[in-house]
Length: 520
Image (cartoon, rainbow, N blue to C red; front, top):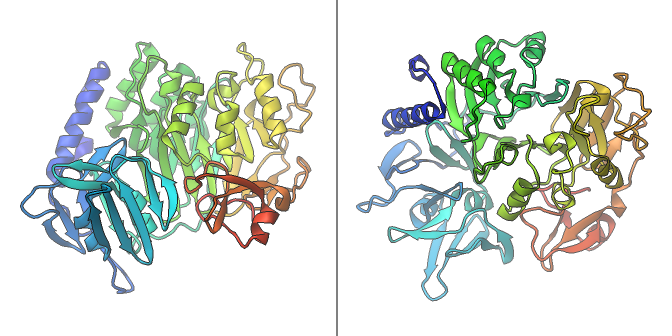
């Protein structure tokens, strides 16, 4: 029904009108939310569905008011969904206690306790301080708390549907037809020269394209060569031509389900051609912003970390996405520079990732040490054109990555790089660049090697003869004063951190954190 809407996009204002019309139609269509949660095994479970700005919810298929007589509804705050604490927590079998003196709300359930303080971005989880993405607030006389944080602590799963603007909280699979993916995840860093285009084959059978490169047909031809005629998710990270010139060919030749872009306009003909193709395709179009969930399935998540503000600089408006598949994770940076990197650090996002697509083609204006220290990548991929006039990648960045022990791939030297994850290990189709690689005046052969490397997040790089094997026992990890886990730097569970080693942490009886998956 939505796809049959016709309109002409003449400028960015039309995109905004279209986005508003889509929202209003979805609001009408889904003002009464049906029961989509089923349990094939018949095991009792809780499935709560709520919609932003809707005072009603369904609990195991039964419609009811969230807060009878008061009209309280879920809201979006700082990019996160806030729900009425008592009404929702009690449906999850949890108790809620309000302390007026301390202005705290305590949620207890499933042998866990979370203490929130109003307007504070920290909470106590079983006595340990943790950081929140959004602070609890009093809205309309009701305490509203961030749903994902407390639900996951209580052992529930949370799914966000951007189109319907609904959130599902459940202690079972989201649907009898939605199971944890078991296939491989394949990430294709396409050699498009001086630009970006990344095609992702998701393990649930869907696909994602992040950018389409600086020429018309390289990206679309590559996708066609893999046998695809449709792409589930397409992301234009920002309006620069080296990222979107190939978008019209993608939109004109593939059935696209959802298209994401920042709320950032541009005056170039390239941008206008993309908007015209977007109009003709008729796919659903969404603004991407920090805190948005593109995909949320058991063991498979795609989260947007940026932009958090829209500025005059295209690069710092880039859409940044973290893709997590079971125990492995990939960070896609677009052209985000130091300003956007620092904002993501300040926002407290879980940046720690096994693989990073380096921002802005390895420019000296991106990939600060402070940011890379938070990401702690084991593998870095730089999409860059050979002999480009910008001096990309920067020699300083390459040296920094080498000194950090990061295994490096560049499309300039290796052509298209494909990394495959089975949920535990990451395999490469090319031999990574040796530590002797220098971006300027390098004598490293640019032949497209066919040897492969493999990487296990808990074990370091293996095979391919491209990097020495590193024992995990001596690797630096972090602990808290009272916690029972050890963590990677930057883990959202890590507070008042104390540096140690894996060996020392194990000797102290600490276990590896299940969220950040530090070396074991």
